[in-house]
Amino acid sequence: MTFKRKNEAAIISGSSLLRSILLSGGLLICAIIALTLWTLREDWHGAVRQTEEMAVNLSLSQSRQAEDTVLQTELALREVQRDLQAQPLEKLNAANLSQIMRDLQSRLPQLQRLFYYDEQGRWIATSTRNVPVGTNNSDREYFRYHRNSSRDSLHIGPVIRSRSTGDLVIPVSLRVSDAARDFKGILLATIKVDYFRRFYSYYELGLRDVLVLMLADSTVLYARPMPDSYIGKSLSASHLFPQMLVKADRGSGEWNAALDGQVRIFGFASSERYPLVVAAGYDKRNLYLRWVKGRLQDISLNVALLVAIILLTVCYSSGSA
Image 1 (cartoon, rainbow, N blue to C red):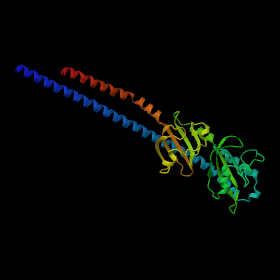
Image 2 (image 1 turned 90 degrees about the vertical axis):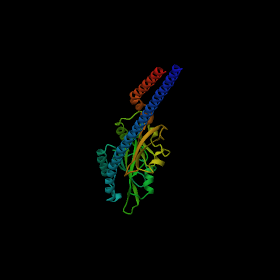
Image 3 (image 1 turned 60 degrees about the vertical axis):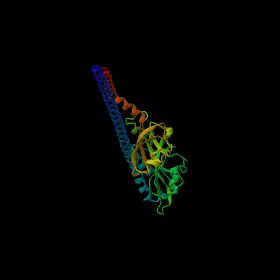
């Protein structure tokens, strides 16, 4: 009878020890899994925040670069505008004005051409050597804008194809008025799209990352690495314009790009001086794959630790049994 009681006590004690081992092992495994998942989650969020900061910094730098490019162009146009409006336009020496334009163009690598069109849209002076006969630009968007507006502010239009060279250019223009503020034509400078294409190519971006220069109305001026068919496309449906830019002139976020529908982590910045916006977007899928690749060693170590704990728990459980 005494032996039977001792045997029952040993069985009860062994059963309690087994439950304790299994419970402790299970709690330890759950704790390690929870800690690993929390650490990975925080690390991923940190990678996203870092990418957002990179995108904002890139868009800010390119916004300032675009602003400086246009500012230099505006100063050149203002110089010509002052000369024009300081003299009777009917006594204008077109040859001298063309030479001034050539001198200005030679100083600014972003410029393709400089022009002066009269109130009828006829070519009066240009930085090109030869003025085409019979060419008229009164049908251009920038000409209609200045003809219908008495404002003296600089106008940046959507990308057009130059009639003189066939190149894609960004038109930047000023109104020319007489003393009575009547319309007397426009001054036009054309900025080469290839200037931004070459400048943006200096930055290291992934195959699915984007860097986009736009007008404030969402019209694309240039988008790397998209083909030229994307130039002139409206991105008004993008999350950027109806949601983000109405709240701040710079920031970051994650949304489907209106360019191609891909999910990217974006940073954006708008120019303080001109109606220009730059957005830089990093492909989220590519970021995730690079992040996983960089964390494989940590994940492998945690998995190995879990396997070791499970094996130890099983061994102790078998011994206790």
